[in-house]
Amino acid sequence: MVRARPRHTRTRSLSLAAIGLAPVLIAGGLLTVAGPSTTTDKVTLSAGSELTLIGHGLGHGRGMGQWGAYGYARKGWSATQILRHYYGGTTAGKVDRPEISVILTGKNSVNVHADAGMRVGGQAVAPGQAVSLSGATATITTGCGGAVVRSVPAPFVEPINMGPSRPPAEFLKMCGSNQTYRGALGFDGGRVANRIHIDDYVKGVIPKESMPQWADSGGAEALKAQAVAARTYALAAIAGGKKIDDTQNSQVYGGVAGEDARTNRAADATAGQILLQGGKPAFTEFSSSTGGFTAGGRFPAVRDDGDTASPNHNWTATVSAGSAGSAFGVGALRSLEVVEANGLGPENGRAIKVRAVGSGGTVEVSGEEARTRLQLKSSYFSIRGQAAKPRIVRPPTGPDSPGGGGLDLGSLMTLPDRLLPGSSQLLNVGTEALNGKFDDLGGVTGPLGQAIGVPNLTPDGNGVVQLFQRGLMLFSQKTGARALAGQGLADYLARGGQPVLGFPVRDRLR
Image (spheres, rainbow, N blue to C red):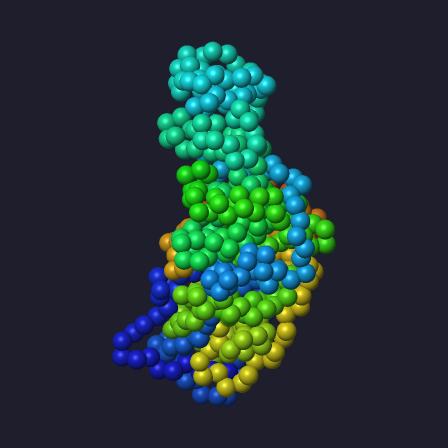
C-alpha cells in the first residue's frame, strides 16, 4: 500500500496531453464498494497530495506490439518471425472470404463516377456518366447532377472489375468531394458501405494504424506483419458477427486517400496471408507498445525486446490524490495499491487488480479499468513507494482465457502521444469498453444478441450507449461498461433510464 506524498511547490496533476492515451479493450473489472473504512490509521492523504506511477508501454499489450515489431525488423527479423513471436499457437493460412463490406460512418449518400466507367444492376455505365443511389434504386445521369439517362434496381455501384489491385481509372469517386474508393459503393443495412476485396481494404488500413515511414528506416518487415495482422483481424471480427466500419470501432480505414505507397507494397507482398487458430482466423489484436512484455491472453505472453524502440517503452505519470479519489468514487483518497500483478517484467509486470481506499469506501477494479479511470497509457504500471508486493497472478493463455477472445477495436491507434480531445476520446474509450464487455458476455450468442446500432454518446455527453437486439450497454468513466437485458432492462427504463437513474453500477441480465 502506498500513501501519497506531499506535492511539490508547483502543483502538477495528470497531464492528458503528455499521456497520449490510446483506446483500450476493457474487460469490465470487478467493482466492489464497501462502507466507510474502519482503519484506525491516521489519514495522511489530502486533496493536494500526489501519487507517482511508473509505467511501460501504450495500449493493452495483447498480441503484437507495433513498436516492438519495428524494433525487431530493424534487427533483421522477417515478418514471419515477427508474427510467430507475438502470435504463438497460430498457423499460416490463406483468405477464403476475399470480399468484405466496410461501413463508411461519415457518409449518408452515394453519388459516384469513375474515369473508366462502372457497372450497376448488371448494366454498363459509360465513362463520363454518374450514378446516384436512393435505397435500392440506381439513377444513371450524364455526369454528376446531369440529366437522367435511366434508372435500374441496384443497391450497389461496382467498378468495371471487382478484383484487387485495379488501376486508378477504375476507382469510384464521390461526386463533389472526389473522395476515392476501391471496390463497390452502396448501402448495407441502410448505411453507406464500401464492398471491397480484403487485400484492398488492408491498403486503406495499414497507414492509419501504423507508420509508413518505418519502411524508410529498416522497418518494412514490420509493415508486412501489420498487413497480415490487420487482414486477419478483420476476418475474425466478421466471423464473430461484428460489422466492420471505418473507425477505431473496427480498424481505421481511409479509402484510397489514406493509402501510402510503402504500406501498399506491404499489403501486396502479403496478399491473402492470414493467421489461423483452431482452423479459423485468429483474433490478432495488436497495440502500440507492450513496454517490453506482452500481456498474454489468447496468445502466450512473451518478452518484447524490440519495444526498446518505442517512445513509450518507459513513462511516469503523476496524479493528485483528489483526482484519483474522484476517479474511483471513494471520496478523499487514503491509499491506492496494486494488489495483483502478472509478474512479467520490471515492477512486477502489469497491474491485474487495483484497490482504492477512501473516506467513502473501498473499490477494487481490474488493472485495465484502473488505467482508464486514471487515464494512463497502459495497465503496465506500479505505484512508487508501495511497500507490499502485489500477489502474482500469471496470465492464462488460450482462446477461452479472459480477454483472449476480445477485439481491440481501437487500440489500433498507434501514433504515440496522439490524444483525441473531449467527447471523441470518451466515445473511443467507451466503445472499447462496450466491445470488451460484449465479447465477455459471449458475443452474438450471449444475452444481448446482435448489435443494432453503433456506440454513441449519451444525451448528457457523460458516457456511451449502444443498443442490441435484446438489451443495451452503457459506459461511464466511473462505472465502466455495464449490460442490461430482460427484466433488469425493463425496470431500468421504467424508472426513467440513464437521465434519471444515471449509469448502472452492475450488470442486470435477468
